[in-house]
Length: 157
Picture (cartoon, rainbow, N blue to C red):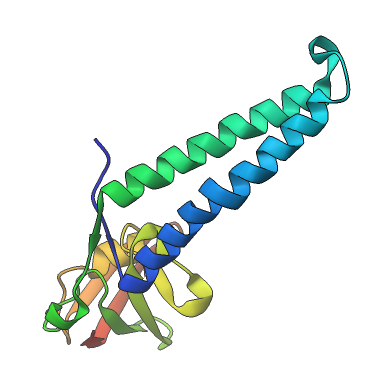
């Protein structure tokens, strides 16, 4: 059984759109590639046909994976998020105690993570170390470079 994953409304819609695209346009493109390769003659010596069939298998596996993810997806009601402590979908402002740098991150599902947009996966080491903490607390987090202490400055939705 797959793990339950929590998504924002926007993230869930993006996943559904990707699945729809793969099922329609993606399948049509692969069928076209297989037909073109088949028209080139003897299938036993046709590398193009073999490649197209392999691409079809990978494409169908991707569709199956997305369907499973969607089947186990749960939509988070952002209006009911408790902002007294850090949870999935919380927006948190933290301060690195060793260099004074402040950062703001939103903790999101792994598939929605985007560092440039300030969205980190709830399964990342930093997010795991922050979960459950409250404003004013210190989170000591072990990262590949060693241990870092972060002070929680703000928690919001």
